Image 1 (cartoon, rainbow, N blue to C red):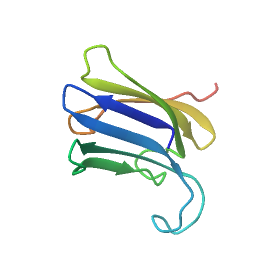
Image 2: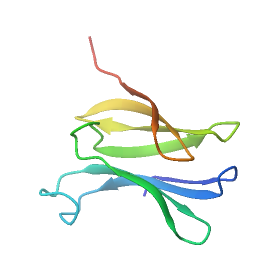
Image 3: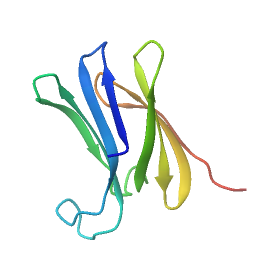
Image 4: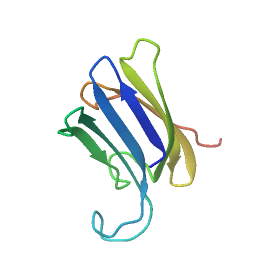
Length: 102
């Protein structure tokens, strides 16, 4: 776990990070994850990144926006730094930026 934040607007606990577990993917290499629970511990939404639609090998940090409507995430995908911005209410992506060298 490398991201742990409380969203007071939606009353969610949001957790993210990196896992090497073979239980979620066919290989034990790093994969990013992000999920939200309500205050009763009920699952609200979640994402497991297997370098398919979004190449996210790890989530290293997060910051809740000042109005509480989105969450900025930092991490790596394919050994390249990336930034994401997600809606805290449902986990949908607002932005995904991969910082590739030119």
